[in-house]
Length: 200
Image (cartoon, rainbow, N blue to C red):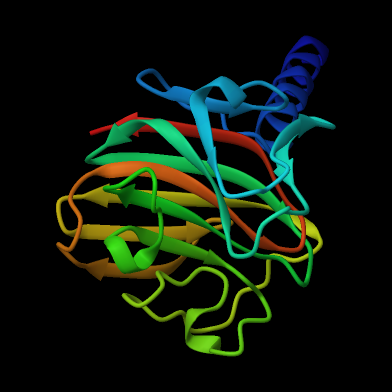
């Protein structure tokens, strides 16, 4: 009986260690784009953001140019699942771009989709968790001051976003079928400590 209790306690500790941590442990087929300080080689920088690897994350907190600076993936993706662990402050204006067709001009106006990270967006419909100009968010979600996880699913015209395990938006849109992934710096600090993608 004592042995069973000890074995059960051991298994419980292992389960807590695995499921209690903030990092995902996905199965096979995933490509790691960012893992702590590693991953800058997978990206190109547009604009003047001070993108760098520091303190266990890829991050930016200022820019030498006006307008957004975007970290743009060197590879293009079509149908995929994307996991992003990020930290933002209350005043951060950022976002995760997907299916950006032109790596030189990654923005929603040219066909990319932006999963918003902006708690203080004056247009509350497109605050954190929204798909800008495609799907409004309701209720309002907050990212500021903590580590968060986006799970983004894009297959054909279907795009679904989860934030910390809760669906924020689900949409059907066929504007852009394939393109680059991007991380936007517009204002306030943005940090990404984990990004993994799995093609479908």
